[in-house]
Length: 365
Image 1 (cartoon, one colour):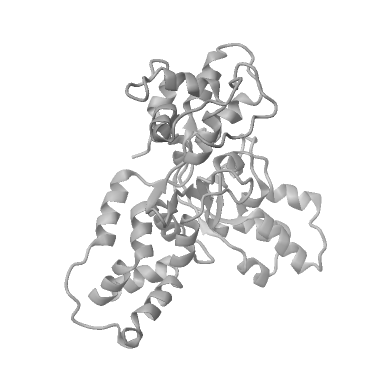
Image 2 (cartoon, rainbow, N blue to C red):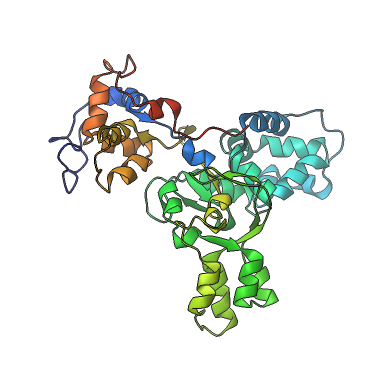
């Protein structure tokens, strides 16, 4: 390769290679396939729908049952370009309703490039927006534009998730760290504890949670509750009170550290996120995050010995394909897996079991 990623600082003995590993561009795909893996845990810890749901819904959303015999009235009098622009400004629920009006509505929606891309590659997010009744409503254009990005809005790393209430692309690491920008709280509790005015309360972004299993601890939740972003609730209090800060007691009542295990509150941010891949409109390729199998191998190698505090976060980090190749250049254990694969022609004998399974959480069906 022509340009090598910069040397890590610090260079950790036994983890980083002494020199940047050189490989040919032609080997890039094989290196990614052999030494990285898609960790399904991060999808299963948030809003997730089983494959059968995707299959049934995708078939329904793509189907055209009959030729149109009636028009859409005044909408059909507009040039096709304007009709497309109108559809891009519709929220997902309204777009869904337009599609159900008649065969012509179905034909128009199905012909939209953005709709076809979303229902093929971001169906999870599409369904999550519909089923959680997220407000303010996300438009088709907004969903497509976010799908065409890949950076976490909070840390700049690869953003494999989206926080639905504010439609913010984020990453699993920021979610697990309980980043304040994506922290959620019970809507009724926020209104009560902060004594919000009706106007301020109704202006808050919100969603209705879905029953399911959430967090990396696979904790179940059967009921449904309205959630609002904690930071937005605190900001609404300031607006209601001429800039006055909420008291510490108020903040404590609506804010709960993610490490707390005796309450359902820590899982609320997980209940407000879902996986979102990244789509490249120039190449029509979709990319999902990958994790480093070499970092998992390094972590397992420590066995019962005390491990370095950075080993866990390094193992849990997610990458774009380009980002992973930059990491691979200095990851000694990923390089050893590559060398063990005979140029990507065989599965490395030392590939960790967790990597073969895509994580340790079991899909919910």
